[in-house]
Length: 482
Image (tube, rainbow, N blue to C red; front, side):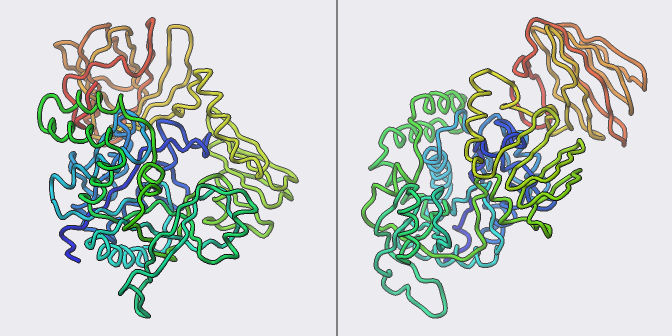
């Protein structure tokens, strides 16, 4: 297998609703630090670099998550801007995989792509890398390969793959054994899952795939012709002024479908499963934390500022505030700045119902945290009232916000710490601690930190609309558009 034709594609557009309130629609599970000091996305990037060259790594994400993805990726790898593919809408994995396959096939007709979710855990990255090499050889022969995980319990939350015959020439004492896929099965009931477990021929579907970009595009052409026509339109518009508008129009007309259901389960040949013991978990709910995190002598997973007395087999997470728990058993407690979850472990799958209720109420708690990270720093919403909003803004040293204006709000800035450089209309001036300024509506302005320590200001917004989409950008160091 020629490594120059191997590419890693990381799917990072999920919403992670089952990890609310820690995850939010604009700050989903893949952006969280659930294990150690790195986020799920950063851990996946490091794993991807075990399989493919760093300059052969691509990320597909939602346009609204692009800032956070770029910021986190930069801490691990230098990704060119065209290696982050942006979707205007979430249409599940078939569209995301197709978009990446189209971009790679355009670049390299021999491209083999390793498709990886950004929010899964792979503890044995070296085993994963060896499996990728074995799967790549199959992919070069025209196989669409999925990694299968040995079922160790009757799990009802995973899809299953039944293996068929071994693939000729792929049975070896020195390497992994690949099998033809006999069939895919959606999430079964418990009785069926127990039968699969005792059968021994069924694997969990990891959602990690290896195939030639051209091969998956051909499968899309046959089985998802509307998606294929849309991808062809996007390819024709790439590099032209019509590219962004074309992507918007194409995605508007796509149905939401996964690559498993829309393609793999409908193909009847050239589908392979490669069983891999790579320490995999999809971290699909709060209870999955127990599989990847250390527990105390009472079976509890405790994170953050927690004081516990006599609780057992519980998950206790405190963001900033002190959380005290007494005598809990099989309970999940997750506390953040603006929301708290308390539920029995048997009901963690219902967390998504809470998120859906918040979405129906148009409540911000499903969308963002009070603290929102940006490439230049962060802001925290301190208070949100009728026609006003108060924020604490922190700007990193030598960083600056975009040159921008707002049509429907005015802003007052007060410097709390550090030094600020302000552009307001045609004026550029500096402010120190306790000094303030006023930004009128429809006025170009910019906030900059020229110093070597973080700049902190308090911003008071006034207006009839205070949404984050009321921004017109004229220049931005991070390539963002309004």
